[in-house]
Each structure stands twice: as structure tokens, then as C-alpha cells.
Amino acid sequence: MSREGKRIPNDQVLIMRGLRAHFEFNDQDITSIFSHFLRSLNHREVGYAISRHGRYQDVEGVSSQDASENFLRKYGRVIRATIFSDCLNTSRKERLLYEAVEQIICAVSFYNNPIISARAESFFVHAVIAWTKLLQAHYVARKVEPIYENGRWWDIKELTRRGDCPLEAAVKENIKLISDIRDMIEHRVGDAIGTSLHQYVQACALNFSNFIEKKFGVLWSVQHELSFSIQFYKLTIAQASNRHNAVPCDVEAKCLEVGRSVSDDIYNDPAFAFRVYVIPKTTNNPKVADQAVHYRAIGSNAEMAVRDVERLKISRKSVIQILKNEYGKATFNISAFERLARENDLRNINKGFCTKIENNIYWYKDKIVPEFVRLMI
Image (cartoon, rainbow, N blue to C red):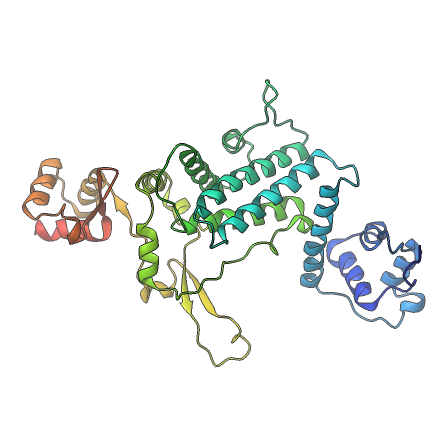
């Protein structure tokens, strides 16, 4: 079979040098990356290219770290294709990583598909499988057998509650919520979740991308596979509110339960729920004119101009505790709460002080607390 010419193209020479400079790849590693069935590179030729000897003396420069990283991310697809084809023997760790990546790609593909009504449900199912495989790969890499005595592999609950779990607290809470909702999906028939829990979905996907690249290198990166979905209608506050109100009651109750059980630091951590404001962008600066929108985190200056679309809901007990501890209403109790609520019709949902979820009343903190303070003056 005919082979390509011996000389290595200049753009590939720069990438080779970048892999050496930024990632400390040796000549043998680089030779294996750039050789394939249709082109067998000589180890000596690669050494000349990297060290600027022989015919490569006139090739100046080295690829940047960003360019080298992007190359490795794309090359990761070649590795995954090799594992999928079963052309070569692969380790258990590599097989688990491949399955994890395939599952998270499935999850994102389902979620970004506007034709599928059960988008979030499909994401939760595949995302839990993806995290399970990824954490199993982590333990296999550490020479720990993630297998129960009965031969079953550890499930996501066991993997995340272990003391040596490598995940941060906010990431584990996000996975716990995703897993709990996945379990609810298996045993319920009701309204579709749609995109109403996008903040948890986006956090889950980004957490996966960050963890796999941090633990296993850019060759396993999925950054090129993940993206925001495109829509045909404008982003508006009203639209966001409608999406939030569409959450099925049992699912929203679970989100409230988990939200109350975690600390404020975890609740506000983007790794638990990726909450941002999306602001249409106008600019006269040609350097940034190609960006369609600004993304601003909750708590930034943008919060002064954009209304929060996910208002904090609290229980009656929490309302009483806040009034006692923060407003000095030491004698305020359940009887006083019920009397004021009844006299002022505060349980009328149309007044905007509360909402009803699974026959339970939850109070909007930003409205009910100031209202009680006003009534007790």
C-alpha cells in the first residue's frame, strides 16, 4: 500500500512542539499520536521536527497551549472511536470512560432535541448512568474494585456517599438531586418536565465535563460535544416564569426539599444549579460583536436590572423562625401566624404571597416576611 510523503506538514510540526512544550509529551507519545495505518512516521523524523533539525530548521514557532489543548480534545474522538471498534485491547478504565462519555453525549443530545417531549427525563436517566461509569472508572484507576460482594458494581448512591469520593459537595448534591428525580421518573405518570429544571441540567453537564478533564486529561474532554441549544423564540422573563411554573408538583417538591437541606454556599454554587442571567448584547466594539448575549451570574450587577425568576419558597415554620431571629418578634408563634394569615387572606394564591405544591402551602420569602412585619407594626 502506498504511503504519504516523509516530510511532516508544518502545521503538524507546530502541534508536535506544542505537545512537548505544554504537556511534556515525549517523542514516542507524539509519534504514536501522529502515526496511523495510512502514514507510518519514523521516530527519528519526529525528533528532527521537534528539535528543528534537518529539513525542519526553517520551521519556526510552537503552537499555543490553547491550540494544543484543542488538538488533544479532537484527538480524543479518535481514541473513543478506537475503543468502540474493538480494534485494540483496552483496559477496564478506558472502557468505562468510553461508556461514560457516550452516555453524557446521549443525555445532551436528547435534551437539545426539540422534537422529544421527555427531554429532561431522558437527560436525567443517561446522566446518572454517565456519572456512575465515570466514578467507577475513577476507582478502577486507583486500583479499588467498585464491586459489591454479590458481584454487582457500585451504584451512584454508593459512589457519591463514600468518604473518599473525589467530588466537591455541590457536585454531589447536584448528582443526588438528578438521581432522586430519575428515581421519581421511573415510578410516575404525569406532565413532562420539559426544560423547567435547566439550571440543574446545565450544572450536571458542566460538572461532568470539568471532572473528566481534570481527572483523566484533555484526551477525554467532552467540551466539543456540549453546547447551549438553539431556540426560535426570544428569551424573556415571562418565558422563564412560564417554564418554571410548568414543573410537576412532585418534582418541584423534591427540588424544594433538597434546596432546604443544603447550606447557602452549596445552594448558590454554580456546580449545584447553574443560574445565570442571559442579557441580549449590543456593542460597537468589533472585537466582541460576534457574541449574541452576555451571561451574568446570580449576584452580579445584572441582578439590579433583571428580576429573579426562581423565588425562594419557605415553610410556615421558617417564616416564624425568621421573624423571631431576624426581626426580634420573640412572641410570634403559630397562633399569631394563622390569625394574621386568616384576617388578611394571605393564603389567597392570587395575592402572590404563597404557592401550593402537593397540597402544601409554601410562602415566598421576599413577600411574606415584609408583609408580616408591616402587619405587626
